[in-house]
Length: 538
Image 1 (cartoon, rainbow, N blue to C red):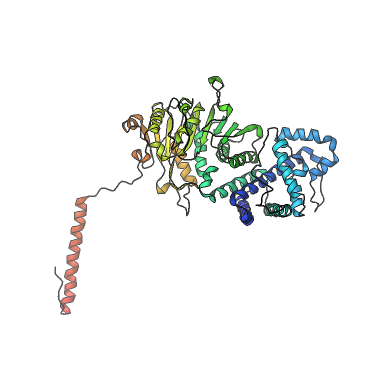
Image 2: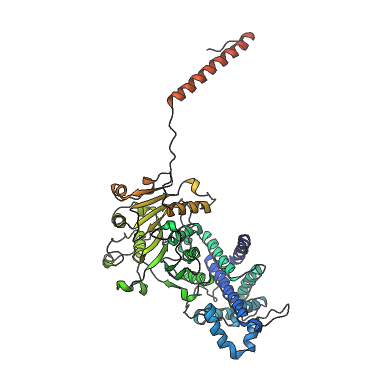
């Protein structure tokens, strides 16, 4: 499928969402829409794999027969089902009984079958508890099939759900919906929902251009970025993972087989479920990722609390887009937290450095971390200044990249990407100021980083270039002289230098102008004299 076809599919799904969400709020409908698209993906992937697995034994239907071939096979071969499902678990890591397939549910919806609602409820429960080897309990917890959003009674809810499923089924029937395309369509919809969610979008989505910058940076060889991407990342982490798009972007950069295991953490239950679906929808097997529901700042994930250094979990690449300047609660014991005790505790008014230090603690010595934070972390005083100074003195801040304003759905403020390493060769800090108007496209409601803008940032970072009005390698002595203030414009100004004025040349031009005025006046007076009119003074 071409990009144009993908855009058309995305727009079709979005128009369906807009047409159907009138009876419920946008967040509720987002959850229904994405969950049903997820079910469609699981079903298509299962049936396609089953068709290859069964080969000639896969039932062939006559034209017009809308029954599920797999359902027929299950009925005809009950003694072979167990072995078949064992093989499917080995190949795609899950099973889905025929009655729970999209084709069966869509058929129930077409016929306004009064068992539809209960079948969908059973389907979601089966996926959560039985489909996968790993338990996906609560995956559909945000979908309330008894909600008044669907209708005031069982009959109305059943009819409403049937209309939603019919619209989705009919809307995408004209497209070649292979499993990769459904993953891309899911990502497209997440972006569209984010762009229409205002401030709440920051909870679950990083705009793709910014996500791409972070992903490309952490995919480069940490010791010598000029050699290009790493062949393999054993594991990657996003400790405020939202919908998981950033993690998937890193995976795309190094290739599907280039990442050993994906780790994510998300505190919002709805978004946590989105992330798990997003992973599966993009072909990441349940054994290849772990998304934890919990509070990053509280560090309530057991695997991150191993005190034995030899067993400590560390990562090749860490990316994060945490909530900006989040207020957080600290205790007396926070200062002794192993993540913070060598640096200090971020102020209660802004947890930015708490997030940064959390991720940095788990960074491998030859790994790279890229985190998006507000500009305040670059120059604010107090405890933040001490943390910043320590990171700089230890040579852990590799680069600071200032981005244009109004790139995010959730805020219009300009932000910075801070790149950190535990071991780096250069003893300077690369400062990139990408905020000038030539480095982005001004949009109606939101500014956009174009592919060439992204390439310019990555090329400058990778080869550590000094570019006038854009970037500079700043020596540590200079940063120290500025009391460890990293305010970007202090080091790289985007102001264009005014051209020097040549006074003698300007004087010559004025003399020439004056001479022309005199000669023109003399000629004009000749006409006035012939007409008997008063002459102009010379």
